[in-house]
Image 1 (cartoon, rainbow, N blue to C red):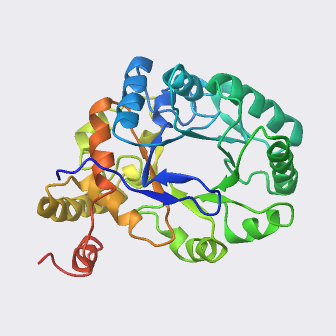
Image 2: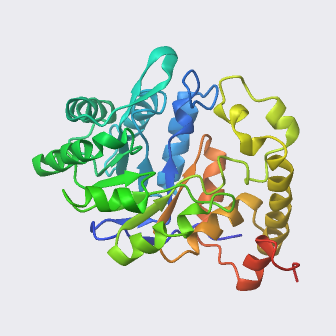
Length: 322
């Protein structure tokens, strides 16, 4: 692949035009917490963010929970002093619990404390998109969304959205305020959103930014059994069933198909996996995790990769590659 230009799409009805891939800041929260990714150098994270901005990426997706503030602080450091900053999206509802485990809360007062802390760490006057991270506990969803609506009315957040919600939960919170954006997991090995969620979002004109298009690196083409065995103890993927047998062999076979299609385009397996998610007409853009500057160009180029119907059928194992 030769191009480094990156196109944009309207994010639902927010008025924001975002690039078709965004900088995912989960992994730069590092290790030491329940869903950490192992050791990470902050200076390398900042260099990766700057490289993404140089190549035209115009939004960053982070969360207060990623390293319990570390990811947001790193993003804030990367953006400090920039003449023109990208859109900043972050999330609330996961608090730091015993032993750095996540504790879910959708109560109004903790959410208000979270947004103030996020604004300080990020160094911004208002958050461009604030999202409920998880719809847990279910009995507090309306209270949490009501707090989001308040913050939006007060101007502390410009747009409001949700992550990991189902259709029933979307309908529930829409009684209070419209959901502007949706952030579901979506990849070749996590297609649950196709059943109902993406269709519903498209019908209502929601912006959809999908996360983990490479299934947390499993479909990147760089994941091997040897690499898995060498992962640090504080990398959450060591505990994920997708990275274990019997699922692992099936997923690595899928990577072989991605790699075979990628060879036609001089692209990696991971780029093909990202491009596959962007084919869905309901998907506005994909969040791609980037930990080092040398990973950024692949993500940007993936946004311009077009797959044929035959290639998609081959990827999905419906017919042989021709």
